[in-house]
Image 1 (cartoon, rainbow over the protein chains, first blue to last red):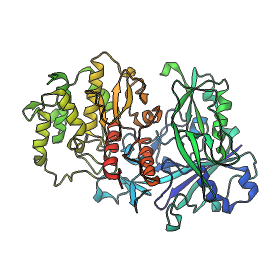
Image 2: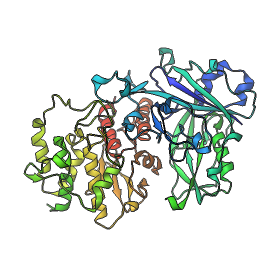
Image 3: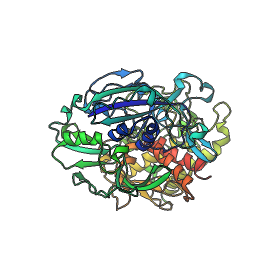
Length: 295
Length: 254
């Protein structure tokens, strides 16, 4: 499987889904530029909002130390944990010596009663707004994947200048392509998932239980998710050709125990995503190894 | 009236921060009551760890060093540090600190807008003195009944349900409480040790409450999603709780 990571920079304010840019929205922004064979062969992940900031590699990353452009650049993943560096919205790589919560929350602008996410966040005194140290630019991170080795990577020209969210006619949601980087899943090391005492599964994006979209069937909660209380659900919508379809999803961010016996296989499936509308970003999972001693 | 000196001390312990002085150089008395006090059971340190990194603090916002809180929502200080005159509000602060009934003191803190004007440390200007103090109170109230940190949960209550000292947030549509004995409410464990775990805890809640009053239409629902999206990104507890209060008050209605 070929994976192409893409980092977009947000050029104008965004009026769209506040949790993420859905894989469906990215897919439909790409569609006019791609042939049917390519569209059939690719899956598109949700786009995660990433603050364009300094960072320090998290403990589980294969590299150590700090990176001045961590939020503004793609870092080639060597291990499974590396792959998730920019996929979790808490962005644990942000520096504690900076106002990390201010950097990782977006500023809201009210536009005719609708809330818009501003392209940049200021932190500090208003009169210092123009100082670079007090400003964070927003990026969007997503990945495309395909089993057909001939379709990825997509050329830069196709990825540059895409527009996401609402009110696009008014110029909202314009992005620029910052960077792309391509690797194959077989290059990624999964050794961290060998021999852990136990494993958890975290939902990076929602898992679809039911969809009103035709040609879909309801999915149950997989048997290998272990949880004592019912999982939190949420209503969601997916758009296609101006039609909106209602979804019921297991909300992202939740964590369950892993009851299966093949964590590496599950981890690979989790990157490829599971369940209904997985082609469009839903059902992305991360397997987390837990060693009881370090608890 | 209940006399609970231990809890009264908790609500007064950091009041010197309204004057913008660190512990070492702080006034020891405000409104005729002692402030700048030690809190038992290590609750102050644990509550601090919920909102600030460990280790020696450093200035996180280079261009801002003030005890007036910066709002994550507006990016501004609620009060302009150049013109804000603490004298204007001295009576209100003194009135609050001199309350002798611990239960009334708790409820007054829950509804005090003024105490949210200050941060819990000048190094971390987006934190909130109000919610830090309420978190300390909730920890003390649980610890003195024998609970340890790892026994604790945050649970969702209705907006009218206030449990003495344990309610840490009182809003228009829901309240939040720290307890060792959840009874089926929407909930999440606080974890094995205190850290800046707000986003992680919020994401593990078994149910999320309705965040804004009366959902009128789709546009309103989207406002609620904006708030929820931010709550999944903020790590400091006092910052997040204050953010809910600010968001509801400024963007909660059309």
